[in-house]
Image (tube, rainbow, N blue to C red; front, side, top):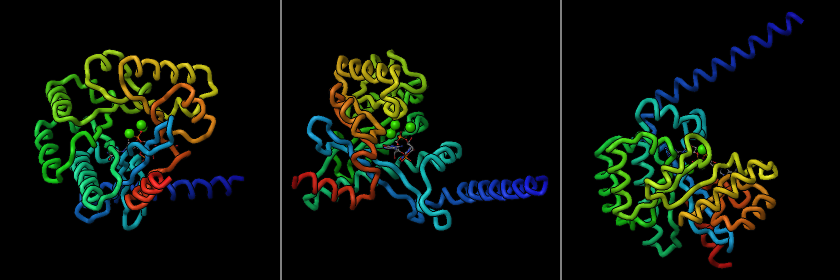
Length: 278
Ligand code: C2E
Ligand code: CA
Ligand code: CA
Ligand code: CA
């Protein structure tokens, strides 16, 4: 038994070493990922609950690392937040999305609004508004096709630079969605103070619709969003039961594996075109 325990220890420490080696190489390689062309934008459709039509998509980043393969944003976004590279990543994603929108338009392909995740950090740098303005202009993008998904952490910063950025977005017509609603520091004050267009119910609530508390939280959030004239999107919808439940409550849109996981651009266009033929 003792021998066995020893072996287990060796295995455990070997996998720990691989983990820390991976972390080390990711940190080292992240800064070169953009210039090396290793980042990809995937799209996950948002579906209108009442019609089943694709009415939008969320842009989700992926990193194709030469050694580690496809790395999830949950692994490298925290690193990028720490070393500040998140600013460049965010600007790159916006540019990429606008470029795709422009290509789709030029080729006569269907177009839907795209939501982009935004780090709270980006709102604190005042040059940001000119970066957005220039990107939209260069790519000839209609601002109403862009929505930024932010979390309550962004609004919690209560800072003039953040407020100015949000005013700017509203002025030029970029929409704002409050992501992961119900987790973190949810406060009704934000809903009153900021020009929020969309509320996204966090997937942790959708996962347990049979739980009474989660059911009540979902119902109240939809009621609240409707009352405030906001759109409400449920994320992480995986089952027909969840869809039926959300349909009954008139939740505007759903997003989740039930309809599609995040897919590369070509596949997303394919989904959009199939939906139109139908
Ligand atoms: P998020 O913004 O909450 O995005 C939703 C996550 O849920 C995505 O994970 C998506 O693939 C996943 N998801 C969608 N439907 C389902 C479902 O039915 N079941 C389950 N279990 N999961 C589902 P992903 O793509 O791994 O992204 C993770 C997080 O990384 C995102 O969470 C977001 O916070 C961050 N992220 C992704 N792309 C970007 C980006 O371009 N910029 C920034 N700043 N953050 C990003
Ligand atoms: Ca999001
Ligand atoms: Ca979310
Ligand atoms: Ca999340």
